[in-house]
Image (tube, rainbow, N blue to C red; front, top):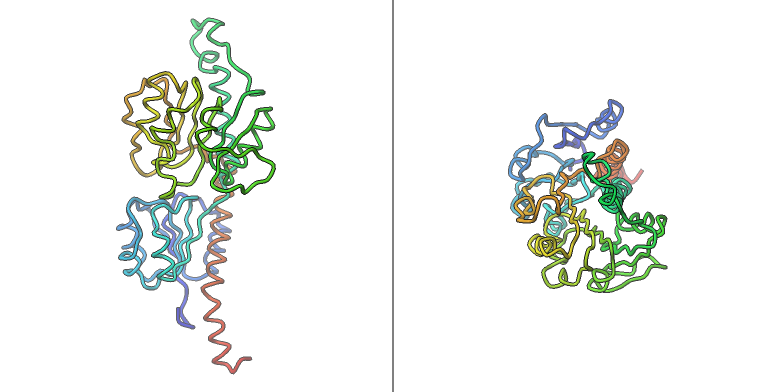
Length: 323
């Protein structure tokens, strides 16, 4: 950006729900532009970002890579309104001098609470308890969480919160993670966690290394009658492998979050419908999480604006003789 140039901030997420005060804060950063309709494809977004320096960007279909960034030479920062950056080629962004800042922590409590709400629903047979009066008392017989085995796959913010909640419920907890980032936990190989746990929570970020992390080979080791809950993005858990486990009766219930912008392959699963539950990307969706998301994106954008402006300010100081 040239020294006298005003920063252009384009907001591609009209559903974020800014307050009037937050919009005023955004306007203090430069020229604030916003769209009335959210784009769903990278190509559509690129057309809206001509002359933009910073963008608030929701998840998109496609890939924002070298060619797309080359078409946006003024772009210097992307603040995502989600935890994911899966549609952004981060290497290309780095090469083109584009900062990328995801909203990484706003949803951890909400998603973990959703996971345990689902786990309690299944364990205490609330489908029978809240179902038709014809249900017999025997069908309502559930299981306590206390004393059961909880396997957590992934120790990001969501995984760590799940460990805390599982421990609070009196569950025995083991984890699988690429690194031993939290002390005092029992770390095990993935196959060992799958074979041991009565309840398995999958909450790893989707990266090339985690695609098909739960696959046909290791899914065969899942404990008989286990409940599997995945809040990872599509591709981390192999659809057909879990479908087979449910059909065989190895997995009692599979609950997963569908991707918010694509048609998830689980939607066409051949499993018996009552054995698989597909939720429409709502695990994070609480009023509190929405507020935290707005606050985090605003912080990220403000920090980006300061970083981008720093070279301009240094240039001005040099032009003024270093005053």
